[in-house]
Length: 300
Picture 1 (cartoon, rainbow, N blue to C red):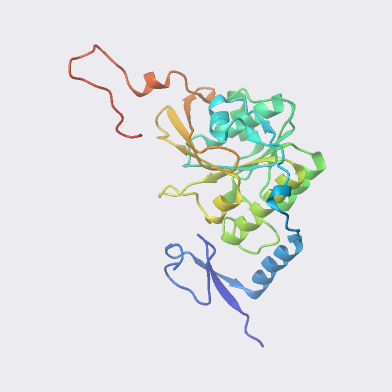
Picture 2 (picture 1 turned 60 degrees about the horizontal axis):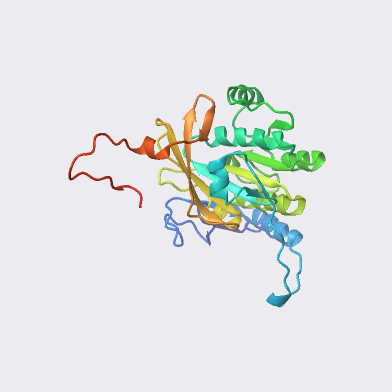
């Protein structure tokens, strides 16, 4: 019986080796290699072949610039970080530690889209529909046009989106999803690569805005393979202490705008809202004293 060919793939960066190694020579991650057999490798190759389409080269002077259409999230701070709203057909990745407010913000944003007449699907692989409904009631986010789906199988999610022609899709979170095409655990390099690629095809072909929630690790990077950040159009990070009121949303990648803006949010009884009087929240100025001054010590 012929021996099954195997390779070992780093779950942090996708680097492949012929044998298991403790430390990835490419990204430096420890104990991150998982074994893939020949069948899994061929499956990945077939996926790449089936989706590859030839294109013709053009002179740059002949290329037409497509008009970018943005949709307001109805949240001034998020619109600021995105560059004026989310671009149709784009993938937006929002990362942050557990409890920071990712799901809370995106559920409210999803309801804002629905209120504008944009048919919106919120997919959760972590909570039940009942739990999401209770949170939506607290956030005043129960709107006609907002649909909930508790599902972790990618193929079922794609079928639902195409069948009902949604304009906005929220995935909470990508680490919980898996595809039948790949026989590896959810969150692995192979799974995340396939899922992100399919979501990218969906967004571009159907002109759908896709928001993806990603959890972060102790070192502050998004959990799972780094390829996820390379494939999406926008990468945003939530920062701050979950025990405090203020949160900061930073843009680390934006193919449609600047990454120099920072959004300031405040946690309230009605969820995350745009913070007002930010200067007053960061410092208070009492009676002026000779020789005293206000300076920046954390951010420049």
